[in-house]
Structure formats: structure tokens, C-alpha cells
Image (tube, rainbow, N blue to C red; front, top):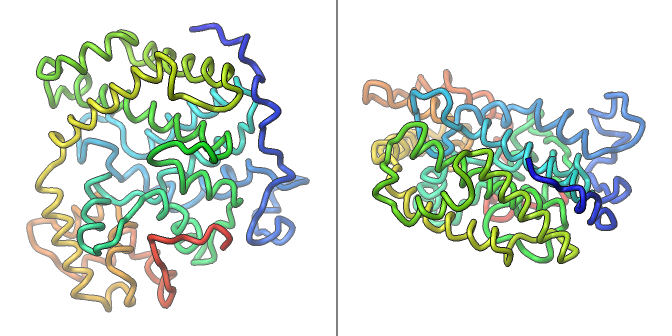
Length: 348
């Protein structure tokens, strides 16, 4: 384990205070205020809301990078989420930032993911002609698809962190949101490498010599690689006085690895999964009575991999089977609501 004492608390002056909390419904009127907490806290978002939500539970049934894999040690969205929580909590503890806020954002960052991971996201975008973003949809899920449609009433800070965790880390993001975004990228890149090349060996690393060379520069094991990049992030952030992982030698190496991994992802997507998504979307669009007139793209996005597989069992799509899927419990909460998955309202 590396030494980080010199960086402890280096960004504590930038820590998001509890006094900055904004909720659509004031905490004293919030249904989770019974938890015995005397004041509002970002910890309420994690313990009382996200981790008790249906969306969080469904993460265990959604693809991280390999769909329907028989190896129990391969990551799904839930185990990936746990990885991100661990990394974000550790980094924020070292830097002196708000650990509870980082934990809340990390716990909820992927609750908007469609089935089959980014393939599902791409499919919905193609079908609707609108850009589907799991990060934006995560906010919508928290607002419309939980607590019988009343929503989780997360803090604005947690929703903002969820909404902006994907893609490029922007300078104007608050520190805890940056920590979580970087933690996500580090976690999935290293875990996906492990799952694809070392755990399942679905691809041969020998066919990717540049990626192999880069990975070996940061350690021989997953833990060594993770420590290498966490140390680099903490050191660069301490030197720049803000959360940053862009210019250090570790950051540059990480970017190269991530770019090489994106060349790998196209080789592991299953074509059959696209067919399953197509069949399921067609069923939902044709039988709108099954989904109370809700946009079929939104219903599909809420599904797990298993929901989709179940509707496609035996190659026969049967509308009655829809009611046996986990998503059927949620659809009624969305009836009659105008939901634009491209434009979530952070103030709701």
C-alpha cells in the first residue's frame, strides 16, 4: 500500500458542507426524516434512499461489460457500483472532501442504465432519434420511478453528481462530483480489463500488444493498478489545489489505457443482444396497453437483462409474459407523466 499522509485533508477547504443541501421537499417534510438523524445529511441519500430503491436492486441484473456470463466473479452494474463507492470514499477521505456526498453519488451513478449496458443505451438512441444518456436518466429514475412515483427526493448535489458523472470531467463540477466521475472511469476500465482478458479470457491480450504494454506499466495485479492511479490522482489534486487527474504521468497513462479499451469493447458486444432489444421494443410499442401508454423506450430502459431475456424465451414474444417482469411493477407509476429523458429537471 502506498503512503498518502502528505496529501491528507489537502482539499478540505473545498469540501461541500451539509449547509449547502438543497432538496425539492425540505428535510423536515421528507418521509426519510424518521431515520433518527437530527439534521439533513448526504448520508440520507445513500442509506435511506438509493440503497433501498428498486433501481439500485435492479443493478445486479444489468450488464457491466459481459452479458449473461456464467462466471460469477465478472462484474455486473451492482458490483461495479460497489467498486466505485469504495474508490470514491477512499479518495475523498484522503483529500478531505465530503465522504457522504461522494458515497451518495457513487451509489446512484448508474441507476439509469439500460439493459445490456452501453448497447442498450445505443439502441434506445437509435430507435428514438434522441440521445439517451444513462447519467441523465438516472436523475429521472430517482424522480419518477421510485416511491410509487413520488420520487426519492435526493439532494440537488447528489442528482447533479449523477447527471454529470459520465463523459469528460468538467472544470466547473464541484469536487465531490469530480472525485466520483474519476472513480467511475478508473474502476470500470481496470475491472473491464480484468473481466475480459484475465477472468474469462474471452479475448486474447496477445492480440492487443499496445494495451498489454500499457497495463504492465501500472502493475501486475488489479490492486496494484488501482493503487497506482489513486495515488496519481491524489498527488495531482494536491499539487493543483483542486480535484484533477489530467496531466500527471499516471493520468496520461490512464487515458492511453482507456482509449485502447474502447477499441476492445466493440469486440465483446453480443449481436444476439441487439435482436433481443429489438424484439422487446417492438412488443412494447405494439402493445401500449401493457405499459399504460408510457413511452416504450423508457420502459425498456428500466428493464433488467433478465426481463429482456424472459420476454424472448423460446424466440416467442408473448405480451402476457410482460406482467411477470420486474419492470411491470413500476410502469403504473409513470402513467400520464411527461418525461423527457434528454432534459431532466434537477430542481424537481
